Length: 269
Image (tube, rainbow, N blue to C red):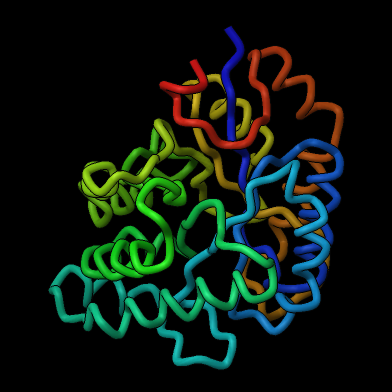
């Protein structure tokens, strides 16, 4: 049986080169979702290009608290510590989520299909509750966006410690999201060290082999560029080359994986 996979490129609108690479892959049928950093100054000019492809790809919000677009962003370590200690303001986080949702909709013409988080901040304690609240203020209960569930990580990639930490800090996110009526991915993959030395092609083959029907895999492709402000710039071109090439298409065929827009496994089966 063919397995349906939502392959999502993160970080749309972070830069022109990242976004151009993502649009190339959407046109080639190699991606079925992308998540947008709506705070980016590039988003207003790039929204039309993504909107023109809205029939082929899920467009979501990449909720951001860590990448600096001129706002008061803080490093991931801050959010990890404060969320575990429950020392965050839920109303302030709700308002930030609403601002990012509204900026997405202002330029895209409608609300996002899904919500995930830059460095998975959306699934941390307190932040998740603020996000649930924000979503319920903007969406009808019968048309909620789907959510990425990092605690459903099904493969550690090349960094078992990183995977263990992610699962632990996001524990029970999937259960709490489903209790509130959100659809989530049944299996999540795509985490790895994000170093140039990593074997992205080999890891992707492992993810394709092990993923379940209705799975979601994140990736971070972009056109190759020398961008000192992007800590994973060296990985983006490598991911793009593989995803755009014949080998990726063949690996999907061999493992009976179909790149498709999101459907919960119970629906897609």
